[in-house]
Length: 157
Image (cartoon, rainbow, N blue to C red; front, top):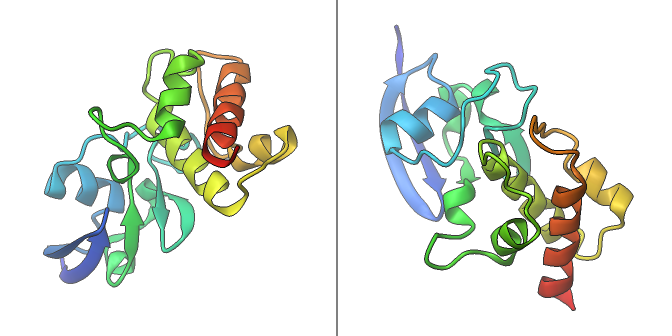
């Protein structure tokens, strides 16, 4: 397999890696860098568990191949907050009981973060649209929507 040299920024840190050209961004994040917050769900870009912010847009990292990563600026859930210092979105997810099993939560948090950075005062319809690429098998989404509303209020008054 042909290898490619990629230079990119992940959560504010510069990386320079040589990887097989058929590796996905998800594999780079998890296997090469060791950040495991981004989850592998369906592997087909349909569930949103692997959502990251890629050059200012949310993408499913399982569909982005290594050559596209060169020059990119990427944010994962680890770049949004930490266990010791959670982002208000992460706090709201816990406080509203929107975490359930937790597998889909990182993708939802990343999508909510992207939404609130672009639309600080979203309507419920805006939230539903902003999270439409993320699936959860454990909840009816009401707690997730309420968590995003709560985070919006905390972040923006």
